[in-house]
Amino acid sequence: MNPIFEFFFGQYANYDTIDIALEIIAVLFGFLSVWFSKENNVWVFPTGMISTAIFVYLLLKWSLLGDMMINAYYFIMSVYGWYIWTRKVDATHTTPIAKTTKKEKGYSVFIFILTLIFVFIVYSAFDKWNHWTAYVDTLTTAIFFVGMWLMAKRKIENWIYWIVGDIISVPLYFYKGFTFTSFQYLIFTFIAIYGYFAWKKLLNSKTQIA
Picture 1 (cartoon, rainbow, N blue to C red):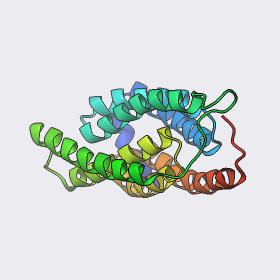
Picture 2 (cartoon, rainbow, N blue to C red):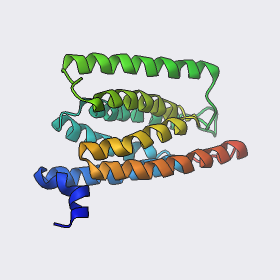
Picture 3 (spheres, helix red, strand yellow):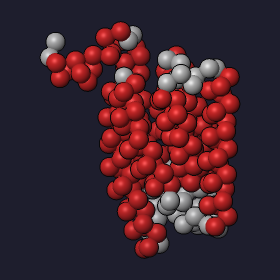
Picture 4 (cartoon, rainbow, N blue to C red):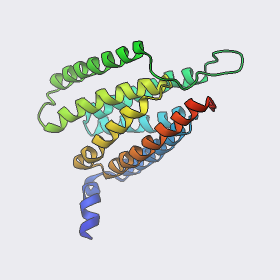
């Protein structure tokens, strides 16, 4: 086997074919979701729900509790975000892109801390503090929880959390043996950077598309 191919994909030798196919499908829908988010398009949520539902199944099967909880939370927040993004604020307009208020910044800190405590309790209950990746999982879970909440609220700062979390997740998922997912987060990083500037442009121009 080609050593480069072995380096990137050798870990899949022991995986079920159906699981590999499901991971690829989940990654593809994940790409669509992030792209629609960058475009400020409500399709971010249905495509994201398909991706996260598949990942919840796979990550639970692979006993990756932290990652599974992130995706389960994504699914729930996608339902909430779908409602927020399509909710009419007046006769003709839906919830617009906006900057995070001081109160929402406080909520963000609260969600971050609460997530750290929650993951700590869950990992302790299942005796998952047996590897350094568990500590990184805890951090990324908290970062992504805040990012998803802000995205559901249509706040431009959500992209900052996605960028930070994505950068951490690229080497983390590769180390765990999920090459396709690692590549997904690498591309997510670039889309998130582009998404921030695209939303900033829309925010400044006040021209938004639901």
